[in-house]
Length: 178
Image 1 (cartoon, rainbow, N blue to C red):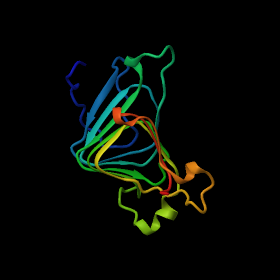
Image 2 (cartoon, rainbow, N blue to C red):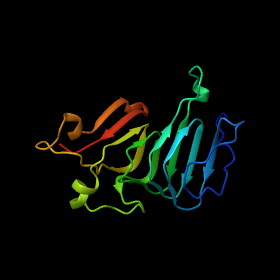
Image 3 (cartoon, rainbow, N blue to C red):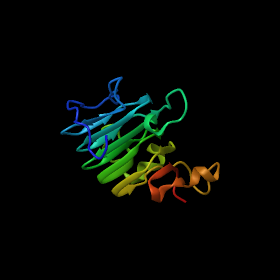
C-alpha cells in the first residue's frame, strides 16, 4: 500500500467488523457518523475503521492465519474515532489499536453513555485486556475489579502494562485502582 490509504469502502454502519475481499490483504472502511461494533472474532486481515464516535459492544479477537508467521499477513485492527471510543462494560478483550481525537472510555453502557463513578464498583467489574496501542486526548480508566482489602490477587488490583507501550505495541490489562 505504500504511504497511501486504500479507497474507503463506505456504507459500514456498525455490527460485526467487515471482512475484506479474499484477494485483498485488508480493508479500509469509513463511516460519516457514529458506529457500534459488536462482538467479532477470527479476524485474519488488516482492517481499518474510521468514524465520528465508536462504541465497542463486544470482544474483538484476531486470529493468526495458518502457516508461518509473516508480517504482511498478520492481522491488525485499527479503530480511529474523530471523537470518542466508548467500550461497553461487558467487553473483556480487544485485539486492536485504538485512536481517538477525544476520549477513550473503558466502561460505558451498550449505547456508549457514561456510567456514573459511584456505580463503577458494580457495573465495571470485569477485567479488560487491550492487546494493542491506545492513544487519545484523555483515557478514562473506569474498571474496578477489586480493592486492596477485597482483591483476590495483585492483578485484580492494578493496571498491567506489558510490551513496549512507548513504541506503540503492547498489552494493557485494566483492573481496579490501587
